[in-house]
Image 1 (cartoon, rainbow, N blue to C red):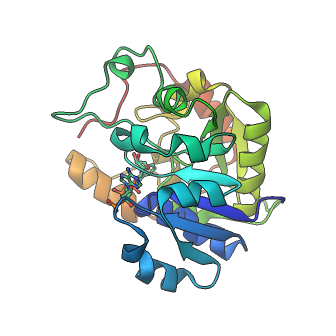
Image 2 (image 1 turned 180 degrees about the vertical axis):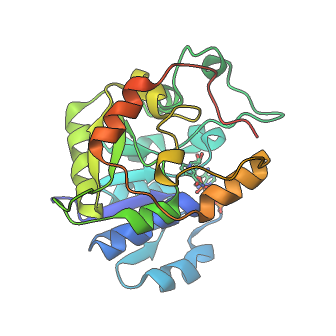
Image 3 (image 1 turned 90 degrees about the vertical axis):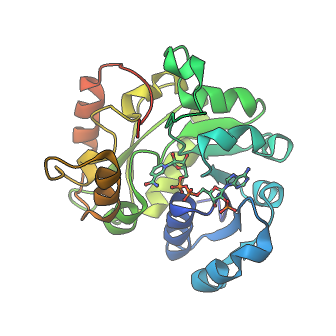
Length: 245
Ligand SMILES: NC(=O)c1ccc[n+]([C@@H]2O[C@H](COP(=O)([O-])OP(=O)(O)OC[C@H]3O[C@@H](n4cnc5c(N)ncnc54)[C@H](OP(=O)(O)O)[C@@H]3O)[C@@H](O)[C@H]2O)c1
């Protein structure tokens, strides 16, 4: 692929998982977080020579594609100017809690990615990597054409940007299913049949929400084909937005 450098803004569970997979697949990564490059030396050392640390603005400038793996509550702090003209992968999910609610999402007026696109006016936002946990991402990758290869959904308003993200995900080891525009991305958001569970199977009964989150984060991965992703997306019914703890 033409993309050789992935900019990573946010190096928590998701950003680091994506960076690990990208490095293992032969890409370079530029990592950033809210606290500054000096706090990322251990992660860079773990990832090796293909990784370096930078500020979010530098990671945005360096990446041909950029993943914005920050809490949705921080999306307005993403570096809009440096992300202008870029394809931005949005894995962010809405998780309202006391002191944080987004009325346009609560009313289903917008999807969370439409809100992100509204901030990143001059970028092409593609919703992807939001419905699978990092552990499963690091277990389910397969070469192109492998039988039963796992597929991930993506949504976006710009066809070329979606092609770029599909190409990246192919390099990372995944098929993709285009679910349509950002307005359609609710079909793979929290509370939809495509969100997280297909990639981990059925959790034990009776878990609290916190126990459920921990269980998903350590669960053994389950492959999900493109045909199954299409079936699950078609079965989605729009309900209240957001993952509620
Ligand atoms: N965890 C999952 O299984 C999962 C799966 C799919 C999607 N998601 C979504 O992916 C996103 C990231 O989740 P996560 O679990 O990786 O979160 P996390 O572990 O809490 O990490 C968040 C990262 O974002 C960085 N950050 C926060 N504000 C920032 C800013 N203004 N500029 C630059 N970096 C900033 C943090 O930097 P510091 O460390 O310096 O504070 C941290 O590196 C969330 O929106 C979440 O909803 C999560």
